Length: 383
Image 1 (spheres, rainbow, N blue to C red):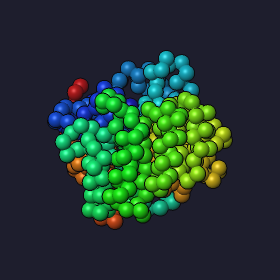
Image 2: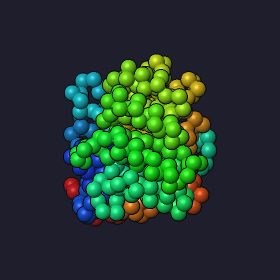
Image 3: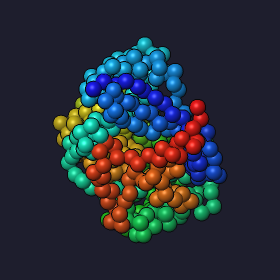
Image 4: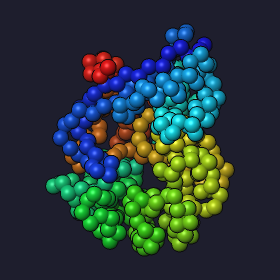
């Protein structure tokens, strides 16, 4: 069995989420968004596929990916990932970790389909269900949205008591919102949510790297008084010494990271070794795929640490189900004006359906188990 064809099918779909100038998601009017279906095909008919956010550049795949993959055994995922990774250095930044992730996920999907097994079992299969936390969008100025601390409180109460989420994570106000970041306003939102959901619901904060070291320590100490479980990415992650100082200043609040720092599993190993975080962070799209993300989870386990998985979707869910040392599955981003329970137009069903008890259960479908609507993609193909 050899890889014979690598294709990109770019298409449009209607999206109700828009991004502001800093890239943060908010509800918006319907718009045509772009995505790409990456398909790997083999000479015996086997194939793997993954939806890539945005309009992937076929020139990057033609120059860097196709020469590595074509004619190779697709089941040798580690060898192919290593070969692609080594091409990054000479790519002038064009062969990004997101491209690596897309190829890696398609390879894992193919591997699962060939084996007739879901990827979460091939990765380790530790559990077949995991509790989810509701992860909010960041703050806004939308009437009835997330414009005030009371808005966050009402929405958190709905998530826990009406929808069944086991925990809640806040993304508070971020630039370009006027006045953001404002640690005092963020703290008011955290306090309002704690009062709304009661003392027993785990809460987390993600202020998205905008705080100074002093601000992060200030709010962290007050989050401890509110019995928050963790805080993630409050500062620029290039400053390892700042995270060591922050982690050392906390008594009960866990610091989670790094989320967006480059360097894949090697960077996470340095964070664990020098005490810059209490829990490591890994998301498959941010670290170059499932292959390095699984290594991060294992190295965290070797340090006696949890590895919290960043982001939603089938691949992140598969990783969370596969390993013992993670707490929740991140479900979102959520907002009062967004119906998360409706699948995107290019999918036949949700990737992460959650029951009323707040559990996301594993699928036994082979591969990543994503129900792609190929008819929609064909009808909305760009080229």
